[in-house]
Image (cartoon, rainbow, N blue to C red; front, side, top):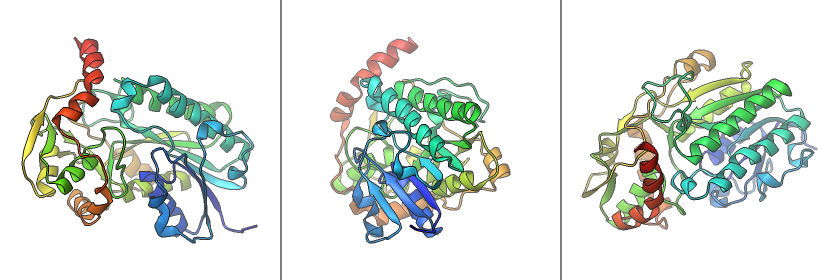
Length: 335
């Protein structure tokens, strides 16, 4: 038996989860990872190969039983596992609700039976929908598509377990996380992966609209640090916005990536012109602040650009095909 403190990271081979693993190992924890490797990659943990205090199990969170031994003796649980691609949720709502809601309930039951000190949930700012900005935690909830709904329902379950079962929990509503190890394959998704693959291939950047839309980008190591603070604080049953509080335009991103030819795509319904986190609460109550500037974060990604060399290269036609039903359903909804 180890005398080290134990933390569980669901989705620990994924983008944010793998950086959470790094943070916990560096803090001296023994880390138990569960990941079904649908979105995550063992490559994201390869730099910790041989680490005696890292245990990785390839399983689906929906298969967890309440007394799962992976959670035995755990002090903290960081719950990142789930389906993160936004666009495909319009076609697969049942899959999203099953994984992001009932999967979360399975993790909550494991944490409850293990009597963990704190569970921290990775929520999504998409719950705010077309919100006024800057957006505070008490803004109206108005999910525009199934992914947003599933993440919000997962958060509601987390807070419910905190209230009814007295499981200490906190929830962080992530705005636009980016950084090394972000997803490289599968569905059309986050702008960074799309643009980096296009840059490697020498193809035009596919910019939605005129590129003046702004996103509250936050580098992944700043995200992981916020989750650690949310676990170790005495505050419980709280919701915190997590962003930089300083939104950047897509045109600025193109500029930092070295510029080049741009193809303009139709603006997508259901997506706001600006995401902008009011981060007053997390700064005040957790003492958190952004450490990695947008410019430095993009530079780090460019240094690691080979990671995206095998990623799919999207163009206007393939994006149009991938988003066809998105336009069909959400245009009809807003008509």
